Picture 1: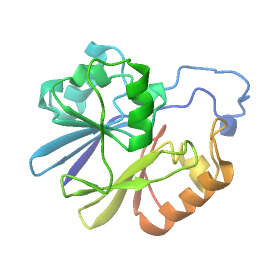
Picture 2 (picture 1 turned 120 degrees about the vertical axis):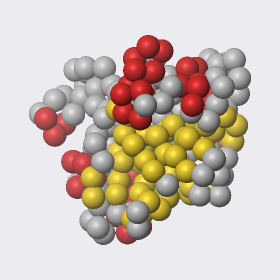
Picture 3 (picture 1 turned 135 degrees about the vertical axis):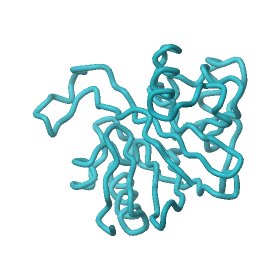
Picture 4 (picture 1 turned 90 degrees about the vertical axis):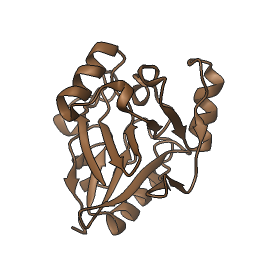
Length: 203
C-alpha cells in the first residue's frame, strides 16, 4: 500500500496565526491524498476546481493522469473537499451515506456518489469521525508497518490536533474533541484536512 500527498491544504482563517474567525483571509484548500493498492488508485478529497491544475498536481506528485485514478472518496460534504470531483468522471465515486446523500441531493454532478461503509477494496477502513459534520468519515489503512489515517476535517491541522479542537464551523465541538482522542489512540500517522501529515502521539 502506497500513499502520496497530492497537495497540502490551508485554512481560510487560522486562529493559531492570530486570524479572526469572523471572515476569510484566503481561499480554503483541502489536503488531497492518493492511496494506491492492489487493483486501485484512490484519490481522497480532490481539491482543485480547475481541471488543468488538478491534472498538473496529480502528475507532479505521482506521474499519473486523472484517467489513471480508479476511485475517489469524499470525507464529507463541504465543497472544498469535492471541488475537483468532476475531473474524475471515469472513476468510482464514494462517500459514507450521509455526505453522499447531501451531495447527491444538490444535483451538482451528473452521476451519483455511491455509499460505502466498513471497508473499501478489502484494504481501507472507512471510519466514522463525527464532530466537524455528523456524517464525516476518514480512511484508515496500514502502510510500511504504520497505521495511517487520512482524516479529512476530523483533524484540521497539527495545531488543532495538539489542542484537541474542532474548527470554528464544526457542528459538535465535544464530539470533534473525542474523535481526535480516538484517532490519537489508534493511528501512527495523521493526514489532516488542511495541513501536511504528521506523526501522532502514539507514534
